[in-house]
Structures are given as structure tokens and as C-alpha cells.
Amino acid sequence: MSAKPSFAHRNLPRLLLEAREAVMLHTRPSLREHGLSDQQWRVLRVLGEHADEPGGIETGRVANEAYLLGPSLSGVLTRMERDGLIERQRCPQDARRTVVRATAAGLAKVQALSQTIEAHYSWMEQQLGKARLTALYDLLDQVIELEVSDAHDPPTLEE
Image (tube, rainbow, N blue to C red; front, side, top):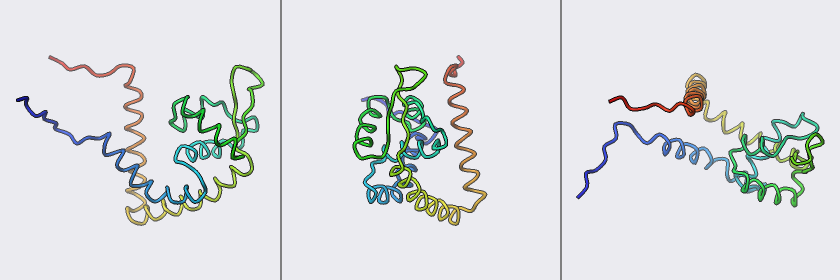
């Protein structure tokens, strides 16, 4: 019989996923009312945040900012283009690359959903308090920075 592994710390990745799912419980019904999947919303949100870039943004950047793998993004973009939410075209500077931008219909969904999502964040702020919500954002930013900057030089166990 093998020994049960012992962990001194809670399972942080699982807690972060659980927190994400808890937040999405409030968001997902609104997404579905607008005919969007979670992935489509992440793409639209990214495109909405970059709507001032008239030429659109490269699909690789969309994939990075929406946390989607390339093959998944390709399918998501195909469905979104079919539904009239986005437009794709070859990058004028490099024909090997594709740029994407939200259509007026896509941006209208971003605008409509932003009100619902911001209302939920306001509710969270009322429940937690502005200082604690700000501290949560700051702490998450610090964890991300710590892990990303350390990814190239992971810690080693000292003997």
C-alpha cells in the first residue's frame, strides 16, 4: 500500500478554476441569451478592448489574450464569422498572417454584455468591499507576474 501524498498548501490551480466557475455562473446565462459560448465571449471581449485598432488584430494575439489554443481559436472564429460577429482578412503587412476584428453586430453584443458583467462586478464590490476586490485584483496580478517571470528559471529544491 502506497503512502498518501502530503501537501502543506491548498490546491491553488483548482481553487482558481473553482473561483472562475463561480464567477461564470453569473455570466454564462447572459452569454447564452446572446448565443455565445464562453470562448466566443472571450474573443469578443478581446476584440472589443481593441476596437480602436482599425486594421484589426492578429489571430495569434487574440489567441494569447483570450487564452485559446490555435486550433480551438480557428473553429471559434469560423463560427463567429458565419454568425456575422467578426471579419477576418489577410494581414496587409504579412499575407501569411490573419487579422480579425469585430463587426458592428459583434461590438453590439460586447456593449450589451458589458452592462450585465459590470453590474455583476459592482455587486461583487458591494459584497467584498472595494478595497478587498482591488486587493484581489492586485494579488492575482502579482501571482501571474511571479509565475510568468519565473517560468524561464523554475526554482530547484536545495539539498
